[in-house]
Length: 210
Image (cartoon, rainbow, N blue to C red; front, top):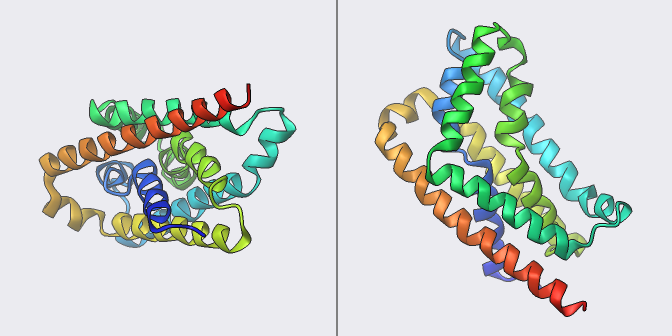
């Protein structure tokens, strides 16, 4: 039986690693010069592809690890460390700087037609943090009904992301740059705490197998 805490943890993990609020300014920069209709098209394609990639890893990631001989506790530790690195970047604004540089490179090369795939879907939406989180969370939602619930949570976060992207111009005016920075850092601190919990659980599981 999945508890309310597990559901909240899953939503928070997906929300923080996918980071809908943090995508606003980057999306505006990536789609500079496009019409509103073209932006909506890019937002839809990027969101569907990014969430689809995360969903694919959620469904087959565990089997892939087994085939490679990697234990789930070991991956939990590695994934937790990777999530902590993502959190570190969010708190110290390294992630925003890196994404901004990616946006500038794409625009300078005039590759606006492909930005739904790169860098929007990969790696901005389906980044290492979100992929790792999907595999880790799938291990806590093993039963078919529980897995459908987890998929629903991921789709909910995807819907929030899509709404943020299509309303990027309007939301950016209301939120403001300062509020975005504060929100990103707060989400980074939350993700850091969640990542430490992943590492702790993995270490305890590894210790218990010896």
